[in-house]
Image (cartoon, rainbow, N blue to C red; front, side, top):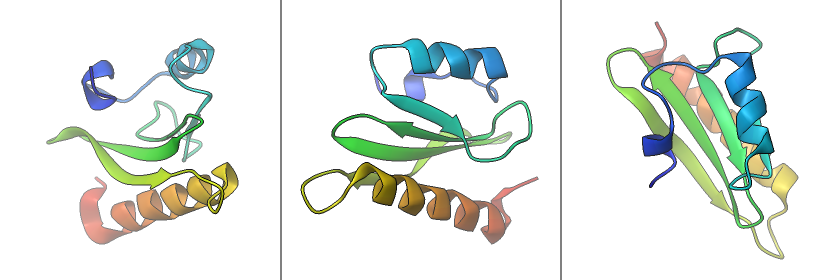
Length: 95
């Protein structure tokens, strides 16, 4: 099951973010915006960081993926994915 297929067809509530952070599949899941429910998320594992965004008409989509290695640390991946989400939202994809 892909990351997107595992998400509900709606933005996530705070308790759902907490559950994702407790799951073994991810090391970290955070909302980009402070608003609730969460429409922009960052997912991190040992190998990658992904940015996912929710749109009412299209559902969830992966906006950016950064592979982590000796040259790319998690913080760099998180920053790149956060910038990708903000750019995605600024491009008129937000309500």
